Image (cartoon, rainbow, N blue to C red; front, side):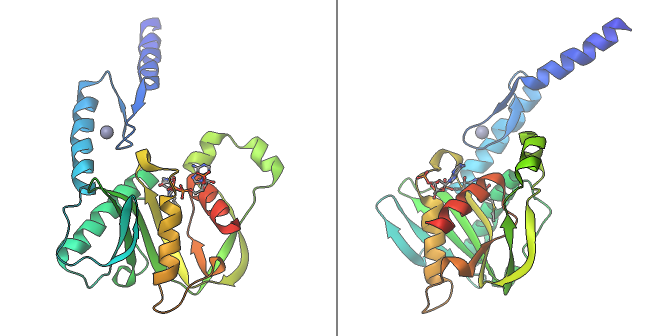
Length: 226
Ligand code: ACO
Ligand code: ZN
């Protein structure tokens, strides 16, 4: 009896030895052979997905000292659409919503940030929308009572019930973990605002972030107020 309990405790402690890979984001137990194997495989697939060999026809919509932004449209050649799809899947793995598909994939615009090491280090998927609901600040009391853990796993943000006019919905935004806090997401959103509608520049009020994660909310709050 006692030894069985002890086993359970040991098994539980192993879990605390979980490692998060700084590049691919996978959480695995470094002491487990099986986990190490799965990580190595996933890690390689991740690197293959973000690798960008260059295309004959690239729709470059912005250029910077550290990279460029390429726009992929649904009617583009298969290899381009496939790449956009691969990156969306990486982002979805990290965001944890594997099951949710785009509301209208045939109209979505994908912006890819490619750096000088030929890696896709950022992605923004924009869709046409008519209205959005503003995310409301958490009341102070609820903040104290909610464990950070809970907030991490359940995106329990309260939304206003009053619809507001919006044109461009950011359904996904993702930046490679080792390249964050270098303004890549900011430049992706700026570029989407400039190129989403031909010949017009969208204001910050005309774009909306759907279902933001804690990271997404911090970014969106900062972006919208500056
Ligand atoms: N914590 C606090 N502030 C932040 C954070 C953060 N994690 N991320 C961005 N900000 C704020 C900062 O004020 C930052 O300016 P500073 O670095 O000068 O302080 C400002 O936003 C601009 O940040 P960027 O460098 O442009 O953002 P970045 O390129 O790092 O990308 C992103 C932000 C996309 C949220 C990234 O952290 C990420 O990919 N996270 C994982 C995926 C995710 O959660 N995506 C959002 C999902 S919601 C949605 O898709 C609609
Ligand atoms: Zn890894």
